[in-house]
Length: 165
Length: 373
Image (tube, rainbow over all chains, first blue to last red; front, side):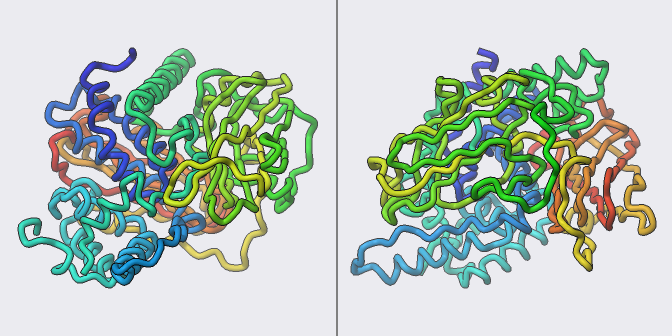
């Protein structure tokens, strides 16, 4: 073993959720795994200096690694939207179509807007926390979220419970 | 009504129909893509992370041995070093030669090697193979000129019910790493390289690599038997020194990059390249304060090797081989770079080797929210 017990425990017990975050950012499980491992390796460098819950720190490293990744790709390779497998028709097909539409539309969002939505709605972070993770102002988070939801043709009031706002 | 939280929860479950294509496993170097869709088991992930940590330590030791002590700080911060400054190969297994050892080949932009571009993203395809999926394996050999390699697999013609194949890369008869193969051609260079493959290579020797078909991803991300239809294309690419890389023709108009937000935030700075001399270094000074996160970004518009350094310590590099723009950014908690003292005035230096057009460097800072800055 080259890593500390606490680090090993963190990877073993906590990385599954972070992998899902990485997947929502990259929309590719293999990229997500690679991104998560990259973030964990970088986090290890600072592990001894992390005094509180390490997850916020690792999440921030992960999002920053994603940021580096998409900056490299954004203009010529950022087309991660794959057609989803067709589902058999059901009584809920309209809703399924709508959910599918939103998921596909999310893949067309600029990476930073996608990151804002993932952190805000999946990770359930506050706007201030999202700002901290992305290294931007709260105002930027608000505007990016607003633009992203507009592109998804979603009304924020319909997608967030009051308690989460 | 769509609840975005519910949607994201659903779509990020491995068994979701939305869960992505399998074969991007080819891009997940070093990961056992036998399970890329669901992510690898936690124990396996820990082992993979530990291997990467060991490799980083080797790099640090190599850097120190060459008297590049300053680099250690950069590596500690998780930074990819510029090629010219990197003392040893990424994987730590062999020094990178200045050029492939095979017979010199005239660099020609745009030439194809099978379905693959011969030159892409700093790498040159040196060996290709193809075989029907029904054969179960595609194999090729080459004389290793560099252990800094990329591996690409591409499987067009699969039946519509199959979105990709899973398999293994076999190097000289031994399984090197799991990977996937899908019907979408890509040649994106994986930043970390392919360490599991590189460890099996020796410069100057002939190596044989094959993609061995395992099973496939069927509807709903379920594992199914590999189909008989389709073709496997496999390619190995080696790093090419920038000066030898054939660049595409320069467009009539090169659009200057636009700031992407870091430098335009309050307290941020944007440094523009010198109009008369794009290769001229640009510098600024910032006060390094613990409790803040610092962001750096480089946005080029022309090919080149762009580097940003803090007090001479390389912090990040962007290598660009075309005129499509893009860029890269990094964020550090000030406290995670212990060799820079709190309150110190730090010089930020942007260099642009080979640049022939406009670029910008950005510097930004924001108060850290979790106390780790």
